[in-house]
Length: 68
Image (cartoon, helix red, strand yellow):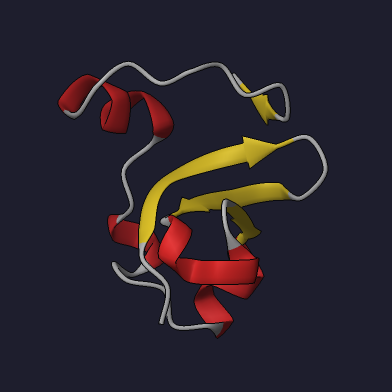
């Protein structure tokens, strides 16, 4: 099981989830399909957007692969 942090749009993977480093080789970003196949928690529809996550936690460093 992997723990998702937020939804994002990755330049290489498209619709993706940023996941916790405890996901091992899957970290830090996995495609939506992989996230759902691995049973990511919380379920996809409950993952916050990158902006919502940043607004409720702390400012995120820019990631050159993330769009937006």
